[in-house]
Image 1 (cartoon, rainbow, N blue to C red):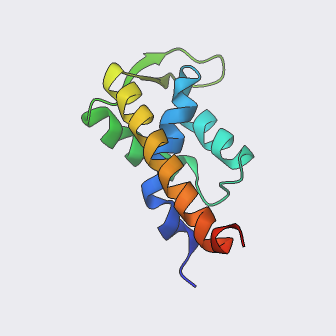
Image 2: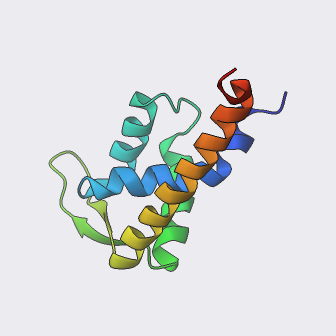
Length: 109
């Protein structure tokens, strides 16, 4: 069967937006949070290209802040457009989840 990474491609953006909605977060912290939710295949290095694209699309904004340990960190937060995108994702996810659940449980039979 195909690698689970393929299945996650369309879902990861929504998961990232959902985490950022909780409050400002920097890339490494975001990667750790994803791993704590069971997304073991994603590293800090694979998160940054997604964050850069989301920033270019206006879904997240960033600000650099001093770090207590090392160089400055870039903290990401959700924009108004990101909030709208997250809400749309949650609606699409609910529909998809319902359909997939119906198929794999054979309609509850």
